[in-house]
Each structure stands twice: as C-alpha cells, then as structure tokens.
Length: 175
View 1 (cartoon, one colour):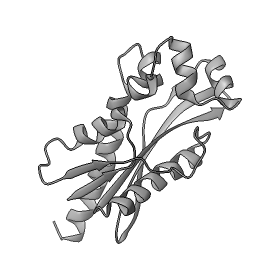
View 2 (cartoon, one colour):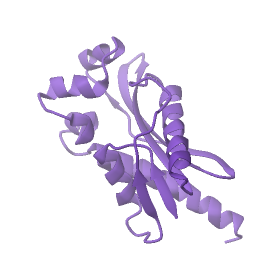
View 3 (cartoon, helix red, strand yellow):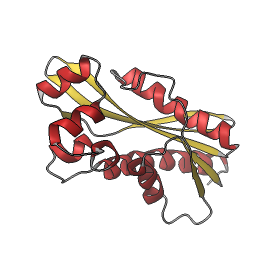
C-alpha cells in the first residue's frame, strides 16, 4: 500500500515510519505539498484543515493509496497559548480520518511572538538558541525537557490515524 506523507520535515516523516514499522506492505513517499493554511496555524480548525490539505495534496500528487498530513499549531485560551497538533489520513472512498495530539501551555512571550505573526519554529530557534528546533525535538521537546519530542508526539497521532483506518477496513470486511 503506497502512502504519501505531505511533508519533508524529518521529525514528521520518522513519526509516520515509526508508527508503521511492523507493516512491511506499506511503502512511503514524502513530498513537499501546500497546507492551504497559514504558515503558522492559529486555531484547532486551521491546524486540522492544514493536516487534511497536506494529506490529500500528497495523496493526489503521488497517486498514492493513502495520504497523511501532520500539522502543528497554536491555540489561545483564557489560560494562555497552547501548542496543538493534528493529523489527517485520506484515501479514496472515505472521509478524512482526523486525530489530535498533546497540548502543552507555552510561555506567554513565545505565544505572544507567534500571535504577532512569527512562525513558532523561528521563535523556538531564537528562544532555545538552537537551529531547526521544528525538525528535531520541537517546542514539545524543549518545554518537556526532552521527555517528549516532536517525533514521539507525531508517532502517537500517526498510530491514532492508522489505527482508525485499520479498524474501518476490518469493520467493512466483516472482521
């Protein structure tokens, strides 16, 4: 089964591959595709839509059986700014499967910079005095002191997505 991953970000690609490491019949192709949303999504709805768009754009571009999109965003609540993460799995003949992941409170100054229009990855590079935080441990890795990294977080989301897909396939075949 050919699966297109709608990103070139190594943390996300490794997450999808880790989630499906026991499935030899699945092949992967990762490619850069548009999310169709802001470079920095700023709501659950926008982040979900970005994940769906990435999944579907990758699937169509690669002529794959399945497409997967993973998207990180920020939401603002009365308690402050939270990191949010969503994923989507698409294929022919079924509605997009969507799942969300961990949420953690961000420092106010980080959230405020993102709200002002600066992408979280850029803010995190400056905040952590590192390069390419978004392609490595991510904000989640920085703010959990390395206990959870971006690949682990997106692996969990990928397992939720593919688990729902396999359940749907088993249910439709009478298993």
